[in-house]
Image: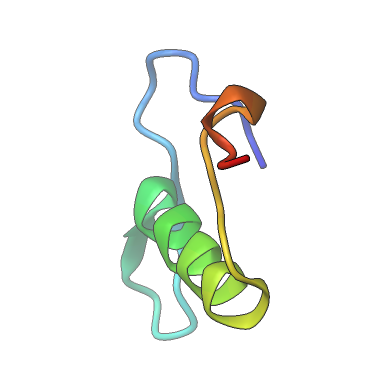
Length: 48
């Protein structure tokens, strides 16, 4: 994924509309959580 350097990052959706990269990242992480369990921001957030 592209690093956000203070710019608005977006991707073109198949229908030509603009999809903010943050929305795509949220959807992808939601799918990963659904398939595999837990997603955390950093290692220290993992439950023991």
